[in-house]
Image 1 (cartoon, rainbow, N blue to C red):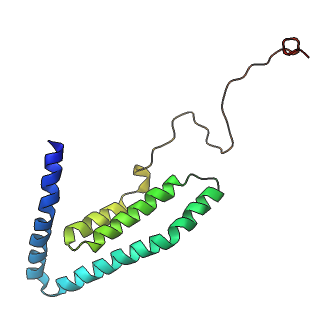
Image 2 (cartoon, one colour):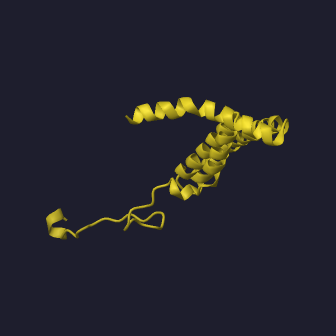
Image 3 (cartoon, one colour):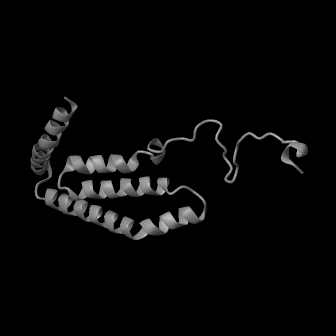
Length: 136
């Protein structure tokens, strides 16, 4: 059933986009074409900028000892938003803006409680063995 609902939503999106574009065309006239071109240009420039800076941001995160997963998530969000902006339509542009505006920390899992907050801290248990048992 979820597959069927996803298929209906995917197939109805282009028809809904055309309907919304026609309604906006009735409101603002030919300016809707400028809106479509500008959103496609913004999406293309977002993807191009992210493609250039991605490897530098990952290497900086690795060199500073941070996890690169935050960089991967933010880059993935920017690429997804850029692709949605390139797709012609107002609904996908709004979805792209929502993808960009939702805070990234909602997509990243938090560390479990009790995990070390300082880098280089390894928690564990140990016990001291007597010297006579070690054969010294």
